[in-house]
Image (cartoon, rainbow, N blue to C red; front, side, top):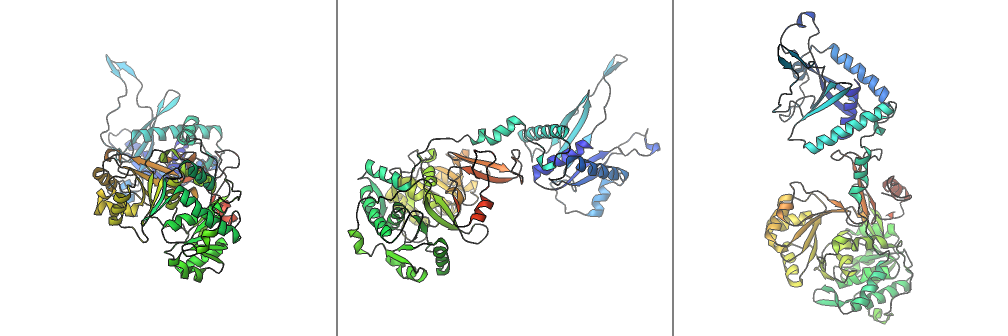
Length: 584
């Protein structure tokens, strides 16, 4: 019964489900007249348990014992009759009621010789699995051998080996402390736990602990005459962009912007958009994207909740800006007096822990909340080694500023000496994509998985010439990736995953050719200095292949939600596997 209870705990932890039903076999020879009769009388009985993580194993075992005794008292009810009476929803791919079975065999025969013949056990081959999973225990000396029979359409050998190892660790934990709560019993042995928590998260890599203004200033000193921004026939070098951003930054400071103040940005996609966000951080503030696609009420809400004293806009959106904002407004492309502001960099002290931007996202709740991203978070993304391969020298800016992909599109090229190619206003279709890539020699691109699918369907060759396309935001279809890679030799497709709270990307999976694309595209491995854990409800690591919740820690993890300390404390929890004070 201990083995039965332990298997139920194992399956509960592996499936993340409380309600666990397994089968076990009975001999069917309860009557005296059947004891010496040759025949197959074996029946399957169902053992169902409610596996509650806070319950002690000893108490759980007592309940399992009662269940087993009751089941065996009714073991003459044929399993098929039970199925017929209960009429569960049938699935031809699996057995009804139970898919996992536990069997404790008696010792078969004692090896011996008789009349010149050697008598011993012989394991017969099993060409097909009787259930999805059968755990069979056979006495051997003073121990037990475990044989696992499994459906090869559902499991591979490595998964079953890990499951057996977890079961051994679980049994050892039960033997050590049978009064331990079920949810706290160990599944991962030391080496496996270290692999999951540490070896798979070996991402440490030095990055500059700096700020966006400082990093941009360094780039201006290195390549002042290199082209920084191209948009609709307008070209700015790094030196020219520096001067324009400095002048607007001085204006913002004159209007009262101080470190950490939010600067609203309601500007159409253009050179002025790049100038506005750079000026905001140079002034010590944090730029606050106001989505041009949003209704006026949403714009008004974002500006009010963020407490933005100044809104930067352009002539195209000036009227809307005055409708949604009652504070100071700067029309960046219509204010001639900006040219009289100082062209030298502001002397405001900006630190790595200061905010760089606040991005409002509704997430799964539908309620807007501002994600507060720091200067160092942006730098950690920019200097990740995945972006240092030369593939992101010319990046197309086409995402809305209020979408976190814009962090990649703007800062990865600008802070590393690359070129920002600004797409025209409005939604970018496949024809525009092809034209922009061809005209400007775009080398790096972000596409939502939806736009990636459209490109694959309409014109997969539109991505020819690009070195890397990062895509994500939803499931990335493997067939679409293969078709694009076949149509664009030399292209690498990367599945990038990460919520806004982790500064755009937390993990990625690189696919350099069609043969490297699995049938289900994974989210990949963590970026530099980031760590990911799959944990259960008690923040314990689950075995590989078991369901759990993904937790992200390390570089790029934002400060939290603006002016929402309660929600921040709820979502950004202490990392039990990292240094003191680290969150995930």
